[in-house]
Image (cartoon, rainbow, N blue to C red; front, side):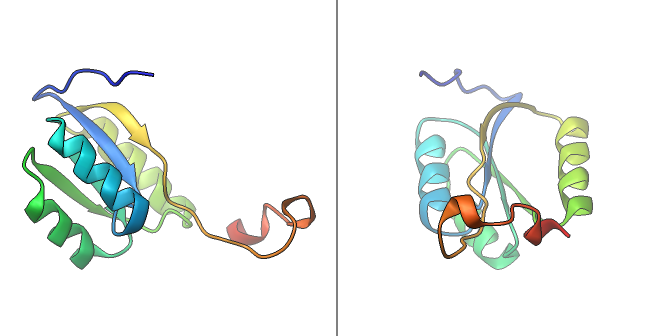
Length: 109
């Protein structure tokens, strides 16, 4: 699948962008000319990453395990000056054991 073309009125949102795969995806998107919106809990790490990206970045600290934070993120993105053209939903948490035996609602209660 190809990516949309970068533009000054567009952004690529990367959740879980403070480290690991999320940070690397953000770097790659920025290197391709995309403006990036970085989302994660760690504002210091997000700001450090934003400072190194050539195409510009917005830093949005948010704990996406929190329902209110997810809603606020959506509202902020919709109200922002850029259209979200790419979403990399990389935020998550791990669990131990077989997936079929896990309770998907445990984290969200």
